[in-house]
Image 1: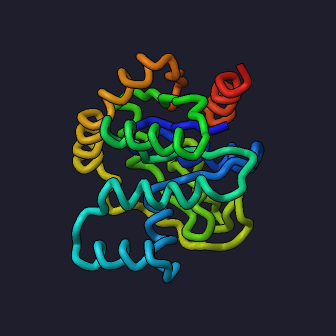
Image 2: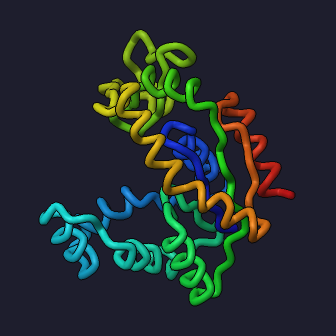
Length: 215
């Protein structure tokens, strides 16, 4: 099964993707992770990515699609989770064409809907384990007093993103909605779009997503 997770920064896409990786043996395809992996791989595609990033240029859609093609050609029976891609209608078309070429299908597009004000409150209070990426929140899931991550069991540094502040987040939200609103209509028209409450309790959101995938 191959799915797309749509949602603004902080909606919980990463948390839900990790759960699907653990429980359904899926592979999370995060654009950022793929670019970092390619850059350090030494492959021809990796050298291209490194060169583009060294110049400070934006990585083209063609490069990202090339990285995704490499992943799709691998052996993975659990399927893929597209996280952070596509972001535009052009990218959605390119991904659809690639899936067709590879004999793959896109089975579901899940929009993690949020209330913007509540999302700002969530994001400005979050911190992340530098070891495993587990997310904590000052209000709902504070960093353990002993500094030991409840996920990886190690004593690590807990960091906050420099742009996890109200002003930056509002700018990122505006960019997300400008880019993504057309995608919501695009996949709705294809009868592939489902919506879940991105601000619900983690287990409740897991249950909603499972309901979509198992329908």
